[in-house]
Image 1 (spheres, rainbow, N blue to C red):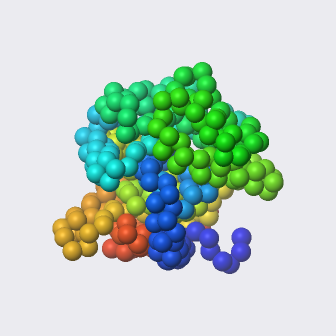
Image 2: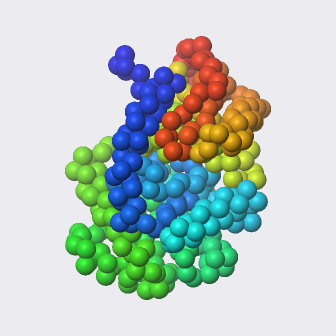
Length: 360
Ligand SMILES: [Zn+2]
């Protein structure tokens, strides 16, 4: 390992610094893009660190709004989740924008065991859950301004698998060679015959970006180990899209009423990464973030209280259920200004270095 650390708190803060600057530098670019492609896009995803849609679709930060949970499992009956989704939908509608929701599951084409741990690697179960969630969106929002689509994320090639309205029509973007505007439009209309034209036009840059990204992954001959788990951060909360790197963090959103299980699973996976020697045992971070926009009002202070609460909550669960991870943990707690993506530190605790002890 080289002397330049690529994990740990300082690395994270530096990463945030750079991405916050890039995010602000891109604000006029983003505004232009938004003008051209106004559809609001959300992605419901597993906490798995390999699923990074902005990277996979070569889309600027801040265009796709991520929601993370274990297995990508969500339910519009969850009290906090439905509030957040409804706010997002109402915000979009008030601005005259459509909402596109990617309801995702994930797997790896080369090996079932690189698939989703949240579903015990059962891809069909993960897909079925995504279909159910899509149907729930349709039940609540009807067919109109809010369009949910089921999308697989295949992590060996970082390819999107688009499932059409008719459950038998599926397109694996790793198999698409053509990419003219007309051909892509035709493909999307055949998958989604009832989708508004506006959304199709706003989906095309993502589809095109993914096709380009897949070609780059193929060309780089990315070794399979790179698509195995290498996360070294456990992220709890919201506002993490500045962590603009594949395979860095397990991210658990605060939406699931069974938050304890999601945090425990992420902690176990993290411990597994240490035990299997895939990550530096001295660079493990429990990172908690709350998100806010308005610095003047109570929102800022509420975000701060939330971050402190969630950090202690997660730490207590790890102490109780995955105590072997505790000595490795560095703790970074703060909140993220969603207008700048700047992360403000509330608390940081650096762990003493841990020597790797052979137990077997
Ligand atoms: Zn997963």
